[in-house]
Image 1 (tube, rainbow, N blue to C red):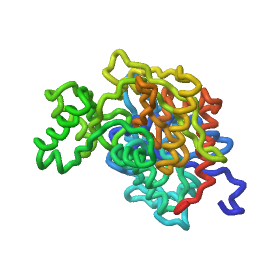
Image 2 (image 1 turned 30 degrees about the vertical axis):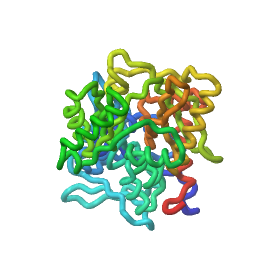
Image 3 (image 1 turned 90 degrees about the vertical axis):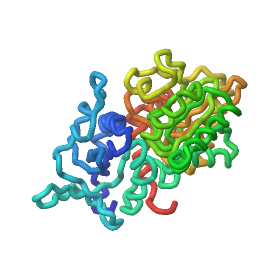
Image 4 (image 1 turned 45 degrees about the vertical axis):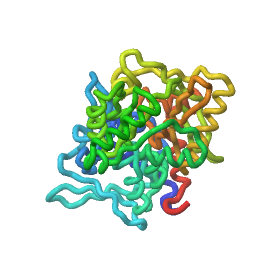
Length: 378
């Protein structure tokens, strides 16, 4: 900001919703973030993106963004108009946001100093929104274009981790053309993988999150249905072997002196579900153990690996790193999430709460880290 406006509060645009299958969870996350932002310190502009991609001006009413009676919220329900659109000019010399409705004169909403994206999945967490903000010259919370893209695509994420020597479990990739042009050959590729690593297998979208589209497959009979379910979310799919062991998560947060790891958490076996799926995470409120019951050595090791994963993918701001602690005592990294959920039951804020960083401080630190950074090469 210029010296003329330095006395004003920084303006934070919270952008949420989006076109991915994680739209509703993004809305829930935005409600929690909006509730936590210190209004004495920041001005706030909530902007929702509908499932068809329209940027909508929404009311600043976090209480309407929660899951109520198992019903998921949407931006369409929160938008102030069914036709109005918010436009962020792709012009690094201006940060003025404009709102327009058909037949009316566009209205300036003022400058935005930083964007807090809480979009999950494609078209928000995968580097696309980050690229738009880089072109616009607007600082934003979280990782940049490359890191976001790597963090979204589990195929390339695992390739990056393996190249840095991080422990990665066995997996196979089925690309769109393989399944569409020769499904028999693609099916054989998966069966051969199962022959080497054993059943059951997990079939999942390569570029989705919140456990969307994941199926546990016990034998060949369930394979095609699992592939089609994953392909509903992403034409590129990932096949992973079962890693027996404990599910451990660890948060990474960017401080002034660099990234630090939180106390880890454990996701205990969920009795009503085959695995920690979407229903278990968000509808049935599965409870994680924070901190995880680990030895000092195990805690130190998973914290070390989490920061290494953050650095390997050149992440910024925040990351939740997910691991399996195998029966042999070794950790295997499953994935990272560059924009982890901030819902009231999300593990990332719970881990930092246990580490001495409150939810409000966590949100503030992320905004401050974004304001310290410039856009462009850094």
